[in-house]
Structures are given as structure tokens and as C-alpha cells.
Image (tube, rainbow, N blue to C red; front, top):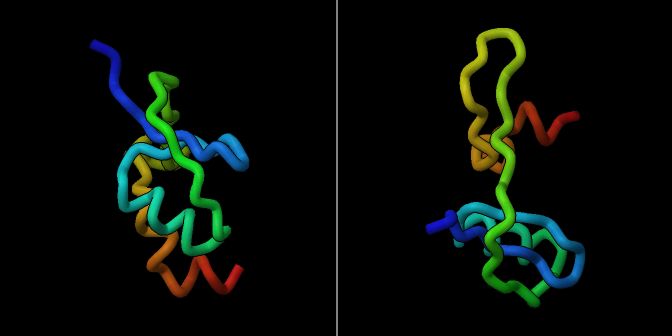
Amino acid sequence: MADVSLKCGDCGTLLKFVEEAQGHSELTYHSNFSESTEAVLNLVYSSCGSPADPRWYAESPTFVAF
């Protein structure tokens, strides 16, 4: 069985977790989400190869400063 992701019907953004969809909704006021079998690409830090957690960016004051 393929992994299920969430897709924003307003802009097409793919999200892995319900929490990500909730955050996307709060930031963009989009509310049209559906299940999708499209793969969500994982962000990887190029310097160390560790997976990046997109939830960190939403919480990090350093990221917001950029």
C-alpha cells in the first residue's frame, strides 16, 4: 500500500502530517485538502545528509528572520 499524503486543493502543496496541513491552513487560509498517493519529498541537509524536519522551520525564530 502506498503512503498517503495530504494535498492542498487550493495550491497543490503536498503535506505528510495533519499538523502540517493545519499549519498550512493557518498561514494561507486554504481549507480544501484531500488524500493523495503522491510522494512527499523529504528535505535533506546537504552538509550532513540528515533529514530536515519541516515542523522545525515553522517554530524556529532564526528561520522566520530570513
